[in-house]
Image (cartoon, rainbow, N blue to C red):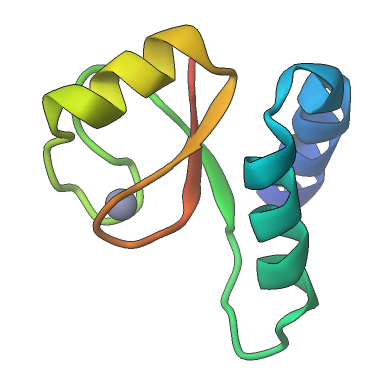
Length: 81
Ligand SMILES: [Zn+2]
């Protein structure tokens, strides 16, 4: 469960660089008690660490240009490690 803390720390560190849209979605998701953690996960390579699916080119581009983006499959938040 240390992962959650780690990610929260990472996220607050990144907060300035995250788009307002992503941040707002993240906060809404976090406020939803139905949602299971982790909400945010660092990913290496072209696959989501949470659902394991390969990112589309669009998401890969977002990952390289934004600090945090949303997985198009599981709708969790991902950032590039
Ligand atoms: Zn995913």
